[in-house]
Length: 404
Image 1 (cartoon, one colour):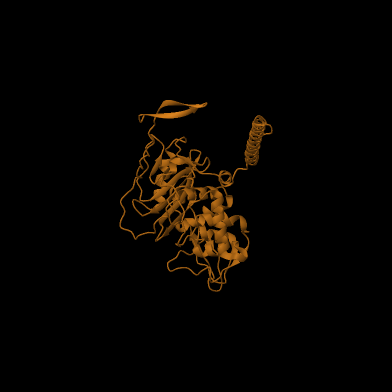
Image 2: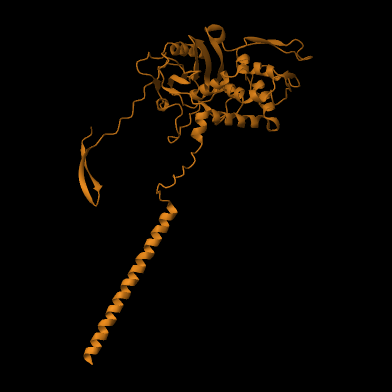
């Protein structure tokens, strides 16, 4: 209690003094730091955009923190170098734990998961695509699967090149074809629209591959939303979990082809692994999305801004999966919103008509009533003046008769 105060309350025509308790405002919960390991000096990365404090925080109020969000009484999560992370249930959507879930950072190649969610429904896997010079126009040392200009590749092959080898050239080709006449820009616009539909409000795509670009961001929470949508697609799981494949020959320049392998080591090193995606750029640092199944539960982990300490990014993901599988299913701190929930949030509710006969006063009639009340008052005043005038006239007449 914060003491007492006296207030005046209107009751009928008069006032009555009342004494009521004055409650002090609830203290703002302290931000609990996430377990973090010291990392070597790294190049400076772009500052994360500041969230609009008026914007709703999707996933629940417990995720509205820059620190750790875990249920009371559960074991502490492992110490990582990742700056932000989320562990969630793929089936129920419950968030089991998070660290700065809505922090926006560069995505690196985990952006390709949004490209897959956007373009997979649009492209025939048997369609042949001819690679162009723009597809292979990549920065030095960029990840590429090895498309050859003029080479012909089935769309299904390009998906393997995208998800196994993280080929930025494959990302460009898929985005170009999926965008139709609008090309890559049309697909990037569609990626942003899909992120909005899913509730990934921290996400803004600029490139289809995840290569660093100004104003390109996502969050650990958004990556969990996107991954949940991806893992609901059988075609995505088929492409994403292939361990290796033979890349098709392109004679005469490449008469034999070559083998590509899945870069996600979780698939061969973690029991029950379901797939995922690795990522790295100078600005994003290491990013990772991984999923696994154990004891009838399917969990997804997303992490951003990691270094290769204490272990590599995918291994930090495995540490979080182990921690998540050790938690009870009720250890929830939020949820992954569904597209239906997002749609209801974005749509304004229609005005509710007043039931007939309730006596509800509408604005226009109220104004008319006020106007008619004013007119009545004027009429009454004029009538009173008329009465006074008549009385005065009679008094004058009587006075005149007496004088005569």
